[in-house]
Image 1 (cartoon, one colour):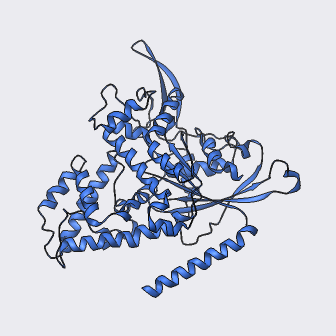
Image 2 (tube, helix red, strand yellow; image 1 turned 60 degrees about the vertical axis):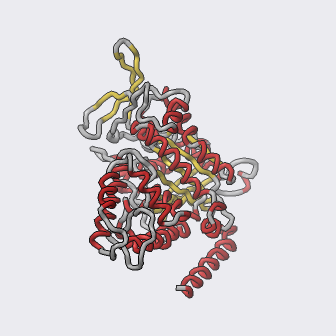
Image 3 (cartoon, helix red, strand yellow; image 1 turned 90 degrees about the horizontal axis):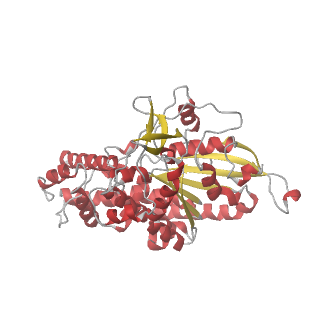
Length: 470
């Protein structure tokens, strides 16, 4: 194992030296990381971004598209043969079908390369011809990013945190009852270990469905080909001194194995190579779920930013080796579920919600921004009379029935503190308002030549993330 580790380090160092020597002669590459928690819309964001960069009629706020600098865009084979390709064509087909449907959600890492032929502008524009800029988009589940925090925790510390969260979360009591009936110092019995892991995983999935964000380990909810393996067969136990060959000792060993074999390789092989990052956040969903879910989202996003501060963790410092993520965008998705008159409130809430997280990133030198977007617009705006009052609503096709419906989610406060303060103080529900969410299906599209799918501020997001490199 030691020889293998040394060989891996030598190979990695040689690759870095080669990349450094050849970089000045190669086409520039932007590695854009796209992540977010479940149902934040990562797959739709990537699909719509690629489609709108290839057909740029709706990208007026991306300067290089508006002034014609981008001459053409085309897909190329991705540079890493070991990572699954993002299924762009399949996902676009789902959204543009006669009966459009949402594509499958992100469950693993994937990658896609879009190459842009760009004519430089400015004083030197006439002295050089077009150049090629490669955009490598890396799609990965936000649940994996949450696992960063595990690197700083022992099994006992993680167990204490996990058990404390269960008290008021869905499925938590079922696991606590099962745990109470289990002797952690008994000799390891695999059926018992598997039963505990399954109940714990069910609790994580139920909590995530209820709007909670801090659900770790992330791979328990997205196991892929590792489902049922020992590295995913452990669960939290009350801190104690476990005897040799006991259930508790084995769970402790598997927790350390999870960090070593699952968490560290992801950050080493993929995350450390990212230049720009967008974090998609379902702020409306958290508001609808209640104060506890909103406060959990605030803490989760602040914790995620630890991944962008390598100085806090010796392991991250080694893998980053002085590199920094240059720009980070926090995007509140599903802005099309609100009338445009409420978009400023959604953006303000997002900025306030992520203030702690943004301050950490700003401190590390990364440029950050927050905005509200809709990667694919599914609604149209309308005004309707309700009890003698005019309400700004949106209309769209309901996902469950396919019928058209008008929707008013409630008036978001202009002062974000009206939501964040009760959330911080442990309020059980919103005292003076009720917020709703609606599940809209994709709208049927009729696209004009040169136009990508309709969106809200996707071009503004692209300008922030990519504009300075185009």
